[in-house]
Length: 72
Image (cartoon, rainbow, N blue to C red; front, side, top):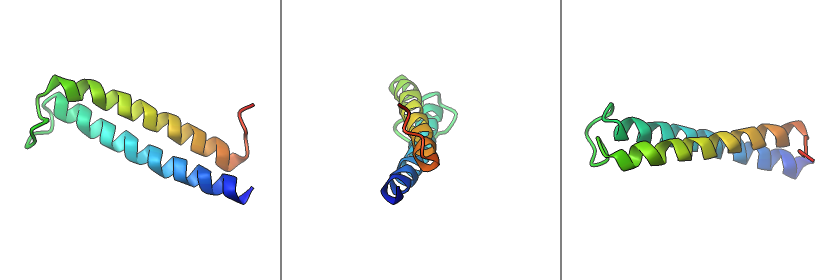
């Protein structure tokens, strides 16, 4: 049980980081955040949401693990 909670926290923190990075990449790709080589590049406007969705899934799984839900 203790390992499951630890893995839940790890998934939760990793997921939050991925959501933040994905959001930043999306904003850079759309040209909203400037000052980078990625600014205004359509590729990052596509990759960003994919990374953010992967992070959201990790957050979901992390919350499930901390609650003790096995999802089965």
